Length: 328
Ligand SMILES: C[S@@+](CC[C@H](N)C(=O)[O-])C[C@H]1O[C@@H](n2cnc3c(N)ncnc32)[C@H](O)[C@@H]1O
Image (tube, rainbow, N blue to C red; front, side, top):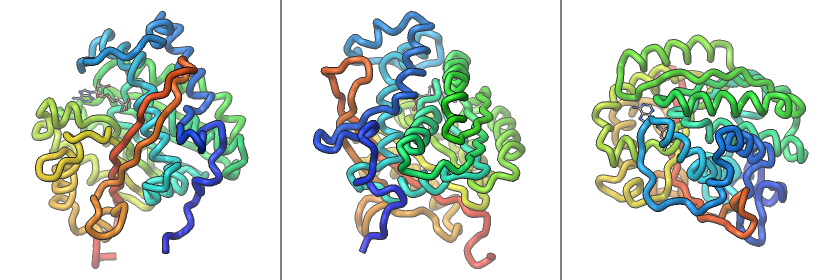
């Protein structure tokens, strides 16, 4: 029998999940901070237009702005689904979020953070759950470290957090955030990030590494081989008490196909590098079910009341305990 979820899906507030329509609503705080970012850049009107078919990648201001305008809400909805799991498909992932961010001193790394969609969504979702009394308002001291190549994206993430500080404090969430230059293909930049990660997470009772929407770069653009050594080091140095990594991607064939999909590659890499960890990974689902979790719902577009979009995700949770199997 399945154990009871830490935040049962039946108890999700209407402000985050419309049960009958099976539709995600982004947290009100997140919508207003996103709107402020768009307004300041003169992008608000553009964000009300339909998303263009092919948005290309890259680190320029133009590309960063396109992502903020048209992809930010999609990234956020995916993270929110992983956290709330409204359709009961991802218990072990949703519980990891609920447990990690329940209170105390906690460390969160968001890589690559882009304009901060993942970290801002996590913060605003916890705040909304506290505001609606779904979870206790125990003081939460959160140290956030984002890493990202685009300086424009880092600046948006920084500004976004700045716009939230006060409303988060009202819900007992105290955030200290920094967004650093990080190149996933460069060992020196990665070493610098790991150093900061180690220093800033010292004394935290729980740690989470969130990696979201990076398969386009790593898989489709063929950069996995150049980045793999950096992930070896990152995961190795993220091992600690109550430490896990959550990797979230869109539910596409490129990500989930057996034999050659991104998650196949990622999971095989993890098994090879960290196979001796006592809980190599927590499988979502029964035996012989896919090793990743997947879910799909609608999400309400925050600026277009008559428009909802499909939100889907594939997700893997890697536990990164300090102790090795048989050596504890
Ligand atoms: C699809 S976005 C995802 C951003 C964010 N995680 C989200 O969910 O919105 C991919 C990000 O990777 C960044 N990026 C591309 N190459 C990178 C590299 N070599 N190292 C670090 N970040 C990189 C891009 O600037 C972009 O912000």
